Length: 484
Image (cartoon, rainbow, N blue to C red):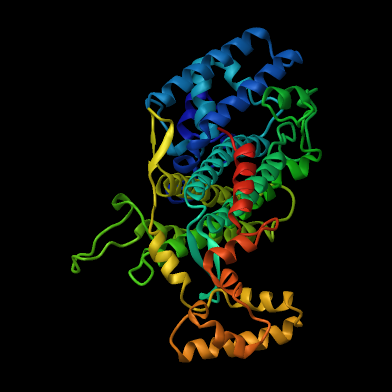
């Protein structure tokens, strides 16, 4: 079959077949209109493969130079939006290979020596995802930094801490925000772990059994930066596993799902805090929308959408797990379905983190290098809410324990005091000393120090506690570990 016939049929395996693929099947099986985003990884991987083939004497230096020149031209065409993506060529890999053959002739055909699309696509997805993880890790650091900035401005702001969405104990608003910093820090750690397992080279596995050519896989891995912290090349050690494994993508989607769950929890709190019933914070108008019928409304659309998109990301995780669960070794066409969920998870997570960085911390001021115009805190509303619900009841119990009562007896005594305060429609701190002493004679005037909100905060001066002194230590720790 001539090369013109091959171009017409557009199938690398067409010599075996007696009839062309139907248009319906062609559209059903094609992936080029979503996997073309892998083009940079495909070009990068191909350049590394060609470099190794030349170094091993498998292709000539002249062919190597032609391949380099052709791939450079393809890169320029794609970046300029001038590359002609063809449905007939099915995917990003065949599109680039066909164009390279047009530009470099037989040298372009020799590029595929010692590799298959199976190990090629596995390598491309790993290279692409590795770079996306780096972007996401940077965004997680930015979001942590934005939360730390807001926390540092609100160390002395008192917020009612809730359990079961009921007032439990007073905490610093900064302490509350730093809880999310810890969550996102763990998310960043997970991303780092996923990156290490993603950054392993399948190329050289060929279709499934390896290849007869004397490939130097370690050289390719080093060229592509697929090395550990000591510079040791990281390779997929089993060719069957190398072409069929997608657990790195599943693991990434799992880490992404946890990140989105943490974003969703923060979103839920922002939605509550913005409501008129709370009035604790205000987010900038550019992150809200109005109502088509109720002119007084400012709706927290961004947090609500983030909460909703969390389900979307978790759904993609379930999709990938289900995709892989019944596949025998080695590669199967099912794996084409890994890309759209993975791509959407990456896009959704990046967009969500970017918008939360700005919504929480504000826009970056180039002059000062600081973010401005993030969430606005209503400290008075927070403190007033903390006065409700007997938030310092536990402090009174601790006070009695220090006076010698067993904790369970102190607990019962305070419960009676709370009941009395409820009947008087006042807080524990507003009960007269004489009334408090009716519940236990050891109660003295100094009880009011522990019954105050600020006294309660200051008393929790242990590692991980909400005392301002501890919060300053934690902020300094986060400043030291975060970039910038």
